[in-house]
Image (cartoon, each protein chain N blue to C red):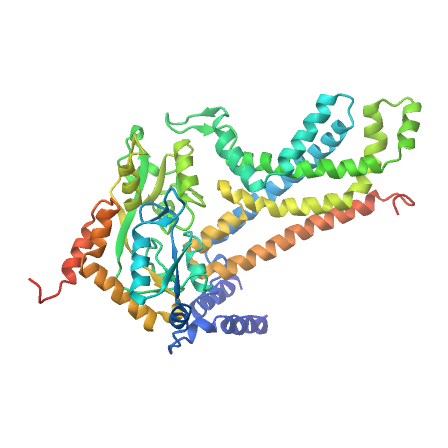
Length: 277
Length: 251
């Protein structure tokens, strides 16, 4: 028995050695992008207005604009690939995409899998989209009741453990929202920023975002784990620093009609160039 | 012993960040895997039963006098065999689900009488049932006309002929093809994931979304469990086939 366990450990360690010994830089992905003259970026297809499909089927949104800016800065063409919350890290790991800008919350366990580089470009917290008729005012009211959610959101588990809600997690936003409209659940638990955008869109008459936002969590874009501390990772840090410093993201926020967040204003202040007045 | 077992996997997770067998040391995740497995078994068992029943009834109706009845079965087969089960699940749950009566526990929620699990069973049973009808038809057609005529001349009605003469013989011919279809059905239950039925795939993906480090182990578990489940079905079917064998009939 002991020998078997030892063998399994050895085998598994060999299998995962790829990530453990990536200390030196080969810059494989960076070089690949430069050689083929094209960067493949994974973005969301269903997270309006960060990443979504317009009426013509094209992927557009705030994060798509950021991806364009990255491609322009590198001087390469841009190819967009739509990703889901539940497969975005795997796409990056497997090399289906070179870079992921997909509304992902920056979490410690995710940093072990993909190369999330700072400074974080955005933030959002957890809230619910719920009918006004229910008059929800506190999280505790969710206890024991069906709440729709989406597979891949890290706070599904938190809402279950902390408030005892019964989360029914669908694969996509569309299904989860449809289930809420069909009154199959009392609320849709999601990012406050996305819910706010939905409410502003006018499609959700009679619904509200009634609870105090919880677990505010910065977002992170990600490069492959091996590139984290190499050219690609450092480059993306620089891109984000500049976006925050020169107000690009604040402009994009207003371009896409997103409720302005204090976070971006604070970050602009934080990275302000000491020579400008 | 059990503590050492859990501790081993806790250590393994710390050493190898890709191989977090979390369900071996965390009660919550273990519960999720088990409840997912139980749901999958229930789904599969219910769908197997209903789809075979549908197959037998459908094949009987195909041989009916009434042209309407025959057309109905033909239409049913075309509809369910020619559309993907994934789309059927979405259609049943979201479109038909809205037409079913609901009750409201709190004045706002409209809980449909048929739950998502119910719709999954209905949809998957009808899907596999459509194939089963055709499988049983092949069996029925393999029974010699003369045998049926002999039954008629002995005073059996059509239904009695089907029940006592044709079906028992047809079943024996149908088992290998039925075996294939039922194996497929067990695997198709994973598609119920799309309407958030908490079966094994749903729970597995939930676990690896909560703990990205547990993805590889969860996939391993999925493979092993489905291999075992399908293995059980195949074993049962083979046994049944052997038990049903008539020496000298059908090779």
